[in-house]
Picture: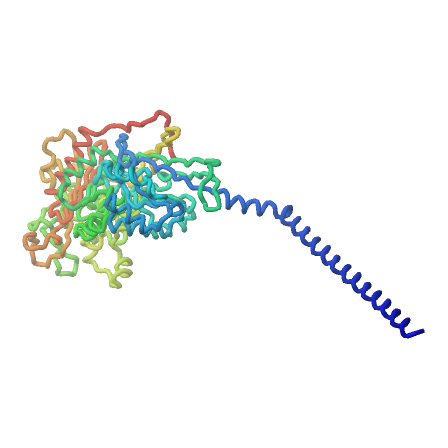
Length: 639
C-alpha cells in the first residue's frame, strides 16, 4: 500500500474515532440533562403537590394577618346601681411607625410647634414604642383638649402616620371615695407581664395596655377584662392593610356589683374626717361589706394613664401612708376589743362562769412575781363578774383569765374568730395578722415565752396584731352566735349582652358551737351594757337612739410605760399615743349592721371611736337600709 493510501486510511480511522467520541459525549450530556430535568420535575412535584399546604399557609401568613381587637372593660357599681368605675371616651394623638414617611424625631418636633408636648410625654412614648410593633398606633399625647383637637385637625394632613384616635379610658366618678376597696387600673408594667406569663394568658392581653392594680379592679380582673377578639385583614408586601376579610368580635367584660352602699360609705368617710384610721361595716346576716374606709386616701384617676412623678412622690413620701389599706392590711394591737371572745373562751373551757367573780384592786400579779400589771382604772373595779368585766372593761379580770387559761389554748380558740388570721375576704392582699404564741416568738425573735406576755395578751396587747377587718369579723361572729359568713365585697355580676344578673352566694364559716347557749347571750349582754349600762365605758353614745347597740371599746397601747410611770399623752409624740377602737352591732336583738372604727393614735376608744361608730350605725338603720335595686329581673344564684 502506497504512502498516500496509508495516510488516507489513517485519516478515515481518526475521523471514525472522533465521531464515536462525539456520539458518546453527546449521549452523556443528554443523559445528564435528562437526569437533571427529572430531578427538577421531581422537586417541582414535591413543592407543588406534597408541600402545597405548607407554602400556601406561609404565603397567606405574609398576606393575611390577625389584628387583635380589645374588649371593653366591665363597669363597677355599688349595691344600688350607683356607678363607681366606668369607661369614658378620650382622644389621643398617635403615631404608627409603618405609615410614617419622616423620622419620628422630626415628626415630634413638628407636632410640638402645634400643641404642647412635654419631655415626660416624649419619654413615655419612646418607652412604649420600644416594645410595640410597627403596625400599632402608639400615643404621643393623651386626653387631648378640644382646642388641641381643633388645632391638629387642620394640620395633620401634613404628616403621614399621625392620627387622632379615640379610646375608652377608665374613670372613677366618686374620686377618692372607696378607693382602697375599688383600687384602680394602670398601664401594664414588667411585673404585670411576668404575672400574665405565669398564668399563661398572654393571648388575653395582646393589645391591652391596662390592667387592674389594686382592690376590686385587681381582685376581679378576670371578670372585668372580657375576651379578646380578632380581625382578619389582607396586607401588601409593605404590611399595609388592603382589605378586611373577617371579624371575631371581642366579648365585653362583665359588670360587677359590689356590696358597698356608697351612701353609707360617704357618711363613714365624712365622719372619719382628717383622722388617720379605718371604718368597716358588714351586714352580719350575709357577710356583705357595706362600708370600707381607709384614711388618708387618694384619687385613683391619677393612675389610669400614668401618674406624674410629682404626684406619685407626694403620695409615696407622705408619712401618713395613703397607699396603706388600713382596713385589711393595717396591723395593730386590738386592745380590749377582743375581751368578748376571750371571755367566751374562758366560759367554754370552764375557767369562769357567768357569775364567778374576780376582785380588782387596780393591778394584777402573777403568783410568785412582784411585777404589777396595772388596770386602766388605777383604783380598781372591786368585785367583778363576766357582765361587769365587759361593761367596765376590767383589765385585771382578763389578766387573771388569760394566765389561768394559758396562751396557746386562748389563741387557738380565738383563731376561730379570725383574730390574728385572715378572714378570707374576696379582695387580694389581706394581711395575716399575728396570734401571740411561744412558737411565734421563738421563730421571730429567737426568745423564750414569759408568763407576763400571756397576761398582757388577755387584754389584746403582748404580740397581738389584728386588722380592723378581723376585729369586725370577730364581732360579727359574736352577733350571729357562731353562725356567720366569710366577708365578701362582690355581690353580683352582670352579662352586658343579656343583662342577666348572677348573685354571689354567701359562704358560711365553720360554725362555732358552745356547750351552753347562754354563754353567747352572757357576752352579748355585757356588750349591751358597755353602751346602755350605767357604768358602761361608751354609755354616752346611747343618748338619742331608740334601739340597743352592743359594743366594745378598746384603747391599745403603742408605747410601753414604765412600771411606776403614768401615761401622759401630752409628753409623748403623736405616733406614740394609744390607738382608739370601737366595735359594735345593732340592733342588739336582731343585728343588721356590724361596725368597727379604728383611729390611729386616737387615744380613747370610748371617747373618740365610739361616737363615730354610732353615726355609721344610725345612718344605716335610720336612712340607708334598702334592698339591692337590680337592673334586671333575669337573675340567678351564683356559685
